[in-house]
Image 1 (tube, rainbow, N blue to C red):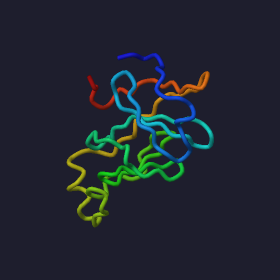
Image 2: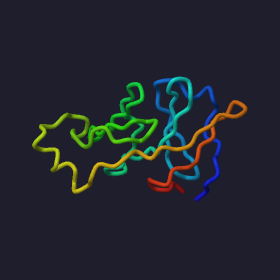
Image 3: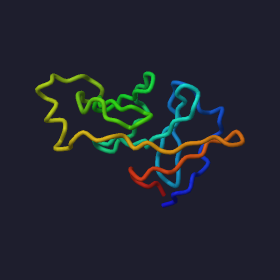
Length: 131
């Protein structure tokens, strides 16, 4: 896998508050703008590796659409681990069942930069490689 930054989008395709799905070196990533700068992270929830493309983005917090985990998109910090099933909040006593033995983990953040109207990112290391 490449550690070089790769072009993944045009600058004007990346909009504040919206998720933009891309492929970088065969792996899924998401882009957005936060406070005017491009932010990139793996499109793979650390819980089960499912896509985060339909997640809810509020400011710099992304909520996983599958199990409700919340992540800081700038640092990757896990703010709240699994607390829902298919987007439906679950009672607190059920949360450990849905953890499926996995401990809270951060979202993989990626280096991003803009040059000449394009967005370049370092490809993620997590998630399945697409052929």
